Image (cartoon, rainbow, N blue to C red):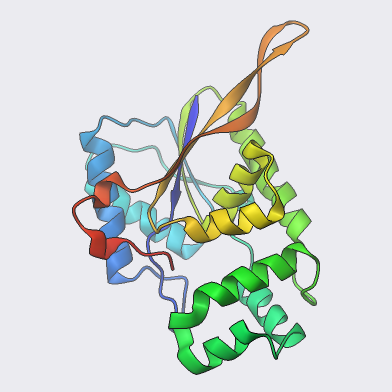
Length: 231
């Protein structure tokens, strides 16, 4: 059993509707599908996090794959946190923070520091009224991972960076600060693999928990560095 998790292709940051793949995001996803087919990857299950960018990533991936893939199933446990609410809440709570001022001046070019600062503040419960706390988000994501960890098949999961980073945090026993860094490191359409960690139970070998097998690979973009994007 394995989970191959895909961060969605580049969305439309800075536009009226972020939750739509950009032309570059579609190309990333199309290339990924071609690479998965050419490298012999087969799946018994496909799960989407429920965002439009997740579905559009899968649609382009499936087009590139060419062969039959399972009908995708939506599991809201793999949905991304409400980043608009978190970033807006941080900006309201800390209007004089240098990262907030930088984005006001420079726009998308200064987003990385704002994302980092906002996520750290959210992890420390220092952001105002948001729909979901950092801890609740982590618990939701881990529960979704557990649902697949106990299945005996190979699953392809299309989701978002925050979800994958929280699963990796749990797998590694990492700090909240590390989870933020892991989130920011993920490339669009990047691949991460998780496998159940073997445990020896009272009744013999048992599978529980997810272990991290690989992180942030983009073999489908090896010859197209211009397609390496982070948001």
